[in-house]
Length: 216
Image (cartoon, rainbow, N blue to C red):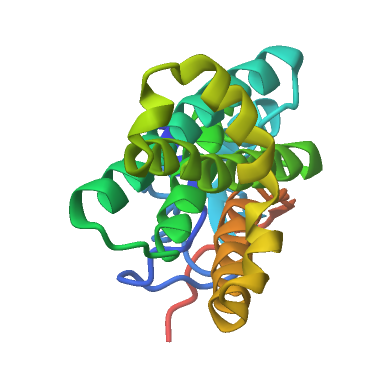
């Protein structure tokens, strides 16, 4: 049995599952036959051992988990920034849909880093990382198209950073329609990161009696 089994409590619909049914039922997590009482974990049938293991291993929001989520999320945001900027520089195509990929990268990385721990502070951080990555990707793009800035990059980066952070809200003067579309796409990207890091409660009920099969 792997830990990934507990992160995916979806019942296996390839096999029949009956509440309070005969001893031929199988645990939906370890896939072993259930000989005695059984439990329900988010609706999925679980054996006593898996239920107890899940109770003991439910993701706990610790300082270490949060710090590791920050590390993974920051790395994903930096990678997303680089990929976003590189795509625009190489193709000369500015496409806001890249923010969707950045949101997915950040949210997925944070959940991976935390060991499955999610919650409100993870959501806020994931959205902040996603926004910063998408907005700050403009800095290397602007510098690429302005060679005079490349001769003294540090002051240029310092000067352009605050401009880039508010750019999604200040681009309307040049292109109102494009600005609105860009904000909508950015919001969807933030929503992806927000949903991926949302709290996912695990409800475990039982034990229930797994009655022996009655001949028909």
